[in-house]
Length: 241
Image (cartoon, rainbow, N blue to C red; front, side):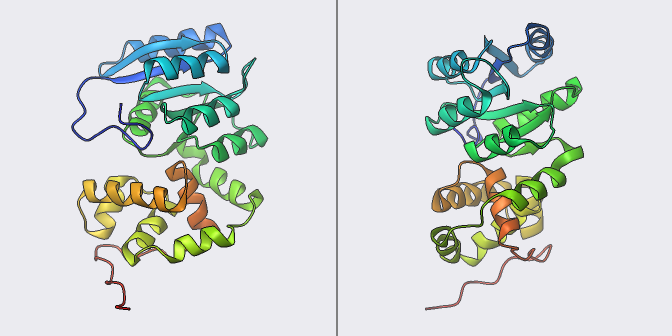
């Protein structure tokens, strides 16, 4: 486990997952899928948010798959604690009604969102994508979610805008690509760089801007209306000061 932001490129072994859902039947179905998938190890199950946080602290999985609505500690609060403690990257399960629960999870730093009625292949793909440090939102609702959240979220603070202004030209291009919802590979292709370089840029941007996930970075890029960089050509070098 390399901490939130994705496993190291040379990480060995399966993607380790903790699963939390208070509905036993739903949890059993999800567990069956995950435990039966090569390359994924289901290392813990929880029926509430408190147990999920405890398991993540004890087991340090790569990904925590959390239901939004759970007893004792809801999925938003659990996400906040797990992300703040750098215990795992979080993939949130939701019925997706664009309510305050989904927005709260975004602000708490969730790395991905998945519909609870998703098929097995999409669940597995989402877990693997989040484990790589890339955001994942159910394809059918990606633009709807980001646009709706950006419309209701408070504007970027002066401090955040100043931090964005302090990014290099290359980093601003990468941030703009995140706003387009591009994966690391797609970002690398668009900006003519190696995928590993793209991943490094993303990590630096999150650190510089104090963001918890690339999903938050995507929303910020949309709030700031950053222009999309041209495809297939490196960014111009920053001006000499």
